[in-house]
Length: 210
Ligand code: T5A
Image (cartoon, rainbow, N blue to C red; front, side, top):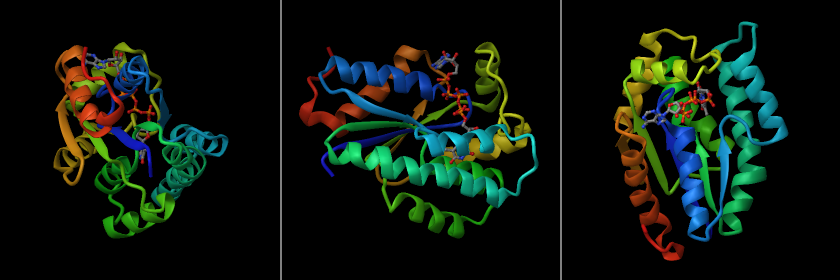
């Protein structure tokens, strides 16, 4: 595909949304507007699934939770991400498949091989060119969310042990295009580190750091 698919990952409050907004503005300043998406969500069906997965007051099985998230992802990939990549856009995603491995496998305890197979079905095997994994300790992320007065969802209400498993799974993440960034540092330092990586994958049409 002609476009470039970039994903930001990491635990709660790591600074993903903040960085997506900054990278989007930086790309725009270089004359390359990006398509930005947030997971789960981004289409009417995916937003409906997000509402249930994150906000439902009812108990649900862990498998139901997985399939809500994957239903949202399948719709987003088909309707937004693939068309944008085929049109040659940079796509910046706030979470993607690695979130499912860290939350539903490491956090919830679902079996990895089955989840990976379901993931491939949902995405048609689409993989990012670059995955920036922002790392912060659980208590730092929680404190940032508290300061931002974020209303807690079903995941954020999980105990610290759950969030520690999620963080450690992110720390173990490796493979083509996976880059870890220490996100406890000031925003400007994190942005500079991320921009260097984005330039390396989207370089041909970018002017470089000014
Ligand atoms: N989920 C999702 C799954 O279980 N499986 C999946 O497959 C997927 C896709 C989504 C939930 O769904 C779960 C995981 C999640 O629990 P969400 O609200 O969309 O929930 O995502 P969160 O990650 O929970 O969003 P947050 O907003 O909490 O985290 P962010 O985006 O990482 O953090 P951000 O950018 O909003 O920043 C938080 C605060 O920190 C400040 C910001 O200004 C903001 O106030 N900040 C910094 N402060 C100091 N230094 C820095 N470097 C900072 N960077 C940001």
